[in-house]
Image (cartoon, rainbow, N blue to C red):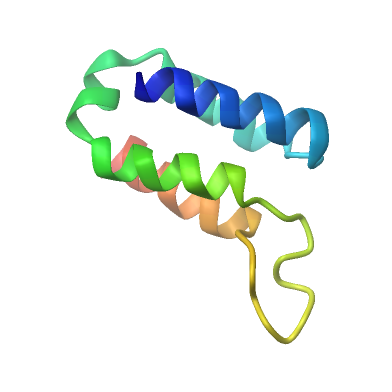
Length: 82
């Protein structure tokens, strides 16, 4: 179920928000690993939100009101490497 939500969020962001390919590839690795999806549910839920909330210009203004590529990369690293 989480994998499906993550897949839908990723597809939406890739199709509509110019989501970076390098992040998409790492998310696809996560989705292919059921053990990771199961053992890190809280981080996966955060990642789903972040992917849905992605904005390539999140760091550009004075008020950060969206998720930046750097935020998503940090979450991915926590899922894959910690």
